[in-house]
Image 1 (cartoon, rainbow, N blue to C red):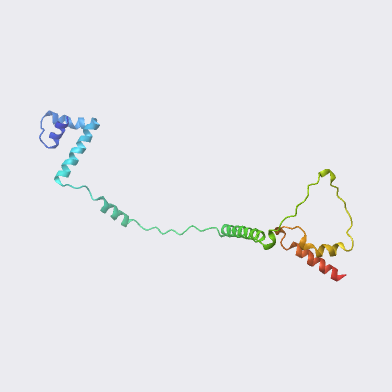
Image 2 (image 1 turned 180 degrees about the vertical axis):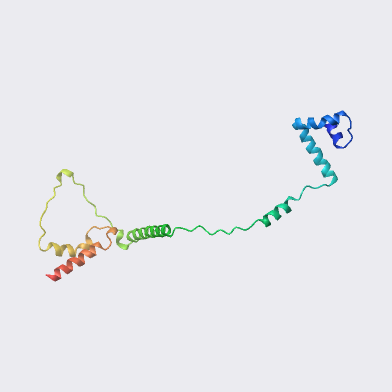
Length: 166
């Protein structure tokens, strides 16, 4: 069948088979593929080139109008809250790092003996007159953590001022 098709394409087939061939090409997919292949081979042998698609595409792209669309406006309120929350996070991390890295932050903790819980009794006793002076004088030796910050000093200053007013 391919020989008949090749002869028909070359113009060498003129009998009844040539009249029935278009209907057969329409019905048979393999025959259609052969038809396309033979015409492609013939075009290549004759030096016929296909259409220049790149020039047509370039011309259509140059003819398209340029669309200038403004940028979408950002919500300034949302942007401000995002900036504030980031600044608060950075400040919190900086504060914790500053408190943890202070020179007196890594003091040795005193050893505490374990006492059974049934032997522990809470006793409330009024502090004597000298207790305040003793606590103020020995405050730097009291166990504390770096997270207390300036709170012990604030109490000291407040206590000192209240004593001067008396």
